[in-house]
Length: 145
Image (cartoon, rainbow, N blue to C red; front, side, top):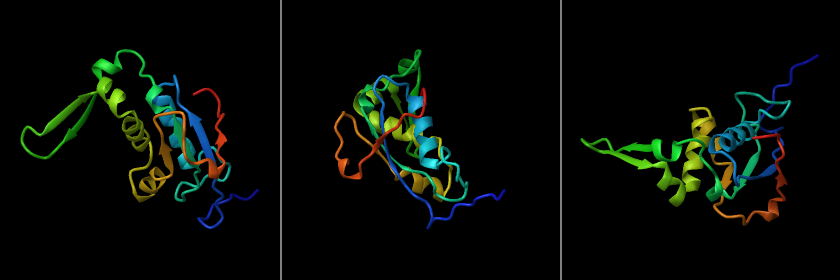
């Protein structure tokens, strides 16, 4: 039996649609990272972008379990003294749920140029409507996430 190593020219990409309504943030992000990486395919190759494209809808209806809304903070640092900016995830999920989901997905992808390229293959929409009907996305039913 031969091992198949995918090449960029031979990779076939599909479009998938995930409805994130009433799903935990981490579960949606980990499933999205798995699809973007291509780990659901038998031809997965770690050094090639063999993942698929992804559309995520209803990001404003994602839930955080436990007390994470009050206890978890989004941190960013400007580089200057006292330049630490903290934002509670309660306000982050209310105002910028798509940004919170994108940061969670990026954190689960490789930290190199390949991971940055994979992160461009996801589109996140706050509502139930999306403008990518021309791509004919399949509804992702990858199990319980």
